[in-house]
Image 1 (cartoon, rainbow, N blue to C red):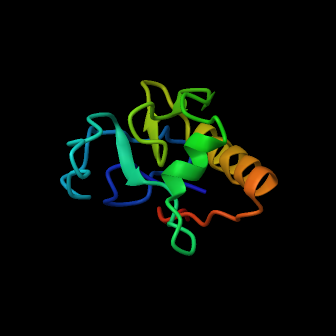
Image 2: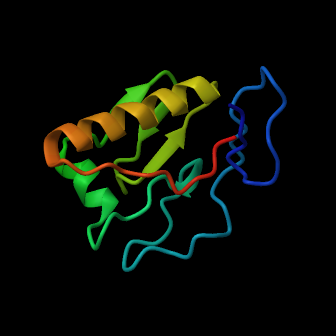
Length: 116
């Protein structure tokens, strides 16, 4: 699977994740401002009236990382790409988040970002 964090086009096979800074969308978080980190915005959809970020935070996953991908300390539903992050790092972190949240809360998080 290949993707770009800037949301414009898929990365070429073998490319690292392309992180070009904060996107002009989504809109600022209520009272928080932009996350201000290299991110594609919210990673997961909010399941059935719950906030995905709260579930991820309550599961103790803020700051969790795989390779160069890390769960943002400012907003747990954002995965931040540090320099050198590989697509495989982001995908593995997504899988770890989904597994942990499902195990702890019996809630299956679905990705909001499109992965192809």
